[in-house]
Amino acid sequence: MSIRHFIIGSAASLLTIGAAQAADLPLKAKAVEYVKVCSLYGAGFYYIPGTDTCIKLGGYTRAEVAFNASGMTGTPAWNKDAGQDNRKKNDYIFRSRQNVNIDTRTATEYGVVRTYFDAVFTWTSGGSSSTIAGGELGVYFAFIQFAGFTFGKAVSQFSAPWNGTPGNITSNLLGGDDVSTGINQISYTAQFGNGVSGTISLEDQSRYRQSQLFNINNAAGGYAGDAASYLGGLGSGVNNYAGVQVPDIVGRIRVEQAWGLFQVGAAAHQVRASYYVPTDESTGHPGDKWGYAVMAALQLKNLPTGAGDTLNIDAVYADGASRYVIGGTTDNYFSMFGGSGLAYQSVGFGAAADGIFANGFGIETTKAWGIRGAFNHNWNPNWATSIFGSYSSLEYSSTGKAMYNAALQNKLGNGVVGSPDFNIIQIGTRTAWTPVKNLTFTGEVMWTQLDQNYSGVTGAVNAGGTKPVGARYELKDQDTWSGVIRAQRNF
Image 1 (cartoon, rainbow, N blue to C red):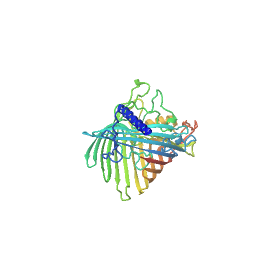
Image 2: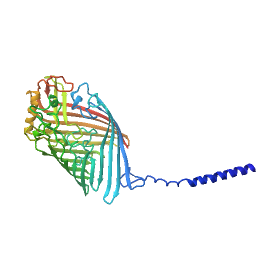
Image 3: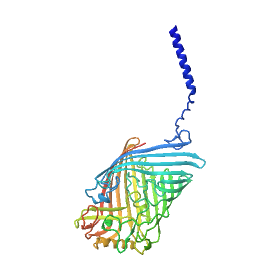
């Protein structure tokens, strides 16, 4: 009995002490709210706990390898070491990438306030030559949308919804606009109902919209550049744009309905050169000019060939704004070498300039046009194939041709005749296998031809790169092929 009383008494004492200590502790915090599904903006959105803001997290993991490529994976071997086809080029290029995007939306009396951020972490093993490799961080999109306005880095309002990929996976199909990684802008979009909208936009031209601007004698007493700059597709040498003054002014009308999409757009682009002699402002400069670009795009859906099949086509014409047709996020100069029975090797080159000028003359703008498209067919829910192609053309004015040729012959000799005009033809196909939802394996192959307009054999020149000093080259058309294998998991 004594032992039992002792145990009971000890337990009561411990309970009393514990209760007293508990009374000294702060009150227990209220349980955190459970994350709730937000169904206002589609699948994948959740309320941020304690707020009326919905958030969606997404992205993808990608691994790919490209063959016979230049620079980025999938870029055709049309310049640098790959274009020279020398032993410094990489016959394959591996790339691994992680993409993360964050989408937030909040309903207000002014409509939905949206923010969007998209970034990629990339590791590339090798580039255009054996010495290039490394990791990089890229910010694709970062913008705010409010009451019809968009502020920040977003897809250009000029672009078709597919940008440079109407049916391909690599961003190297020329013939139209491609700023798929976004461009800084301030834009306003009005919705007119029944899928009809109109947009006006001010867009930064300094990163993706300025092509080359040639000055054929930007040094006192002689022509600029050297033979390597011409054979490298760089025309007379460096880019001679002045600093930006006015952003590109873009307008667009779009109709988007169940049958597909139709869009027309236009852009005004200021062409503003630096000085006749870049290091001497007293030499003066040519007057500013305004270039422009116009486009039309068409998408047809629900085709009789199969469920989900689409036909995407867009066409662009530009005067003094060549990067709306050739370039964007990709290269806009081309230098390709091949075999020859007349000289050491053959070469084809082209440079997508916005214009050209010489001391005491104004800017002679170039004209460019392109068309591209793709037919996308679904064999079944797991297999799909696309056939795509493009045609791009750039032409100098008669005065521009004379300026370019004078500088070219000064470097390469009178054995070279023709004009700096050129065309690029591309044809390719893509096949994708999706064994499970959001996991896709894709293979793509593309053929590219540089149709240039020079002929003849150069004098002894230094072509740069690994090409021997004093060699002679035959001017002729060139072609190449490129291929990509990709695995991608979306989430």
